[in-house]
Length: 186
Image 1 (tube, rainbow, N blue to C red):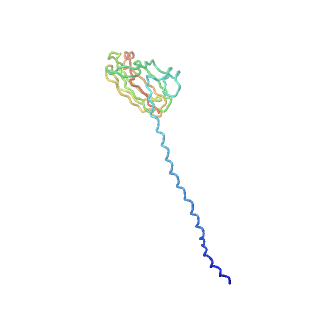
Image 2 (cartoon, rainbow, N blue to C red):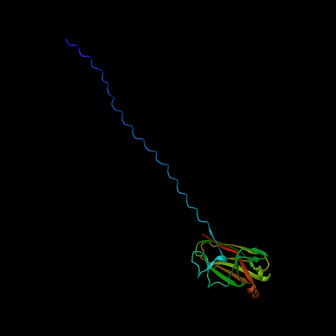
């Protein structure tokens, strides 16, 4: 007799394969920060004693009209009431100077008075006009007295005219100063 066949070896049952886990969702990148807005450019300051005349300028900043302005002495040093000033413009006792702003400007500032070269003589009145409209007029300013501060808002204006009027005919020969005269523009 034949020996009985050995009992079948137990076979390993295979477990069904595990399902593949879903791929991880990638973490979205952090939002990029909003760009920092560019800060506005600092205001540009134009000194009257450094302005070009309209015939030689480029039209990008304030310029003096040559044909519509009286005699102007652009200076780097002047004196009013015994006080020295670093820069400014000297004109006659009866004068008018027109400046085309050529850009958006916000303020005109100066110190006005009778130049000490006039030896304490004379009495003058200073006026700032924008587009023909008076924005500021001084009281009469006498020779030998301290300079009078001027601050005028010129926002929205295109042209400034700076005038000096004498109190008497003799005061027409007096020298008038627009010291530290400057235009603040965007």
